Image 1 (spheres, rainbow, N blue to C red):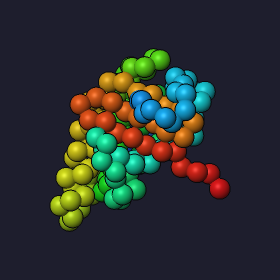
Image 2: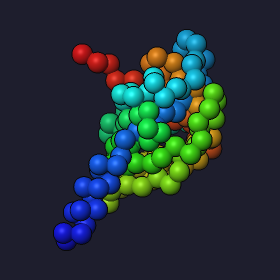
Image 3: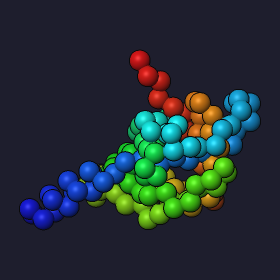
Length: 146
């Protein structure tokens, strides 16, 4: 039990964030992700494959350390960024906590989301919108700071 706790604390300490983005028309000009501009960006999922999403607050945190982490509907997830340039983005292995989630819909959504992250190949972003493309299109909006 002590070893598991140490492992979880270590993983949480290592999780930072990474940057990603993809395309959506009529949302302003898109900008490449730079290490300086992503340090504290938090993004909330708004659609999957052009279907609006209004479920649990699935989110991603991006950081300049080429890491990504967040909440995937039931568990926390984390990954490194293995490729990042003006249009391309790829994540390394995506890991997650293993909480017991009794809602089947949340479990299925989480599997869909994490599988989509593993398949991301390209991105675009502007100041408020982040789109990740691969086999599945994920659209995120930036959290409004108050």
